[in-house]
Image 1 (cartoon, rainbow, N blue to C red):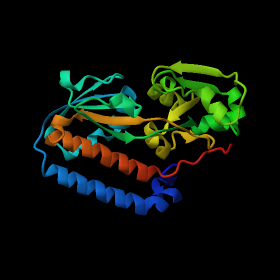
Image 2: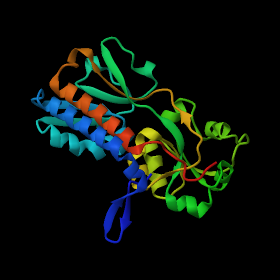
Image 3: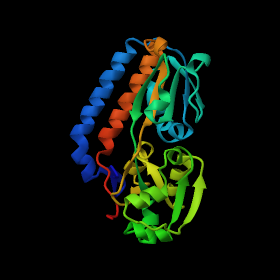
Image 4: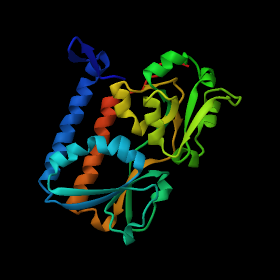
Length: 266
């Protein structure tokens, strides 16, 4: 859902963006209030983060400058991992990890879901027009981009999506396999094929028009991205500030993107 359109040499809001303005303005107001409240109680220090690589690339890094502008006294140290580290024996303050809720149940650890997920096919606008992808069956002629990591571990893949979409026979399609959903999404943006993407990571790409969703069939993921830290440091100003900022940004994203509508109806 693009938020801006071009008129001559200037940009203007699309109709969808104008319709979302009241919701967006309310979300921005809440974000501003939350940031001001956190500023009053945050002195600074080093904050060590361990986050999933795809989350870092597709969600955190594009928003990071806003955090740094608002909390200039906090120095961030960011590492990436697909594992959930033992917080009691590392120097990591906050973890953002992906998986079902039970993965994060440890004594003394606070874990809150930041982003839930729906899974659906996406591709670039140019790719869908070039390949006439008007139905799930038409994907037989497309290049399917696979994520062999987090989704596959939960039993969600192209085969399960085809079954849910009512395509019972295995579709013989070309494919490229990745060990990272972020790489699969970027390949889709580059016009390399159709990715089975997670809604939590593509809000910016949908808003900019770099990706379009195909069809209306969605798969709901058990779990999502969780923010975790030791209960004993929950009240540290730098930890509380980063946690509250994450949730404020996630709320703003949900208000901005609104309902995801398919580019081509199934």
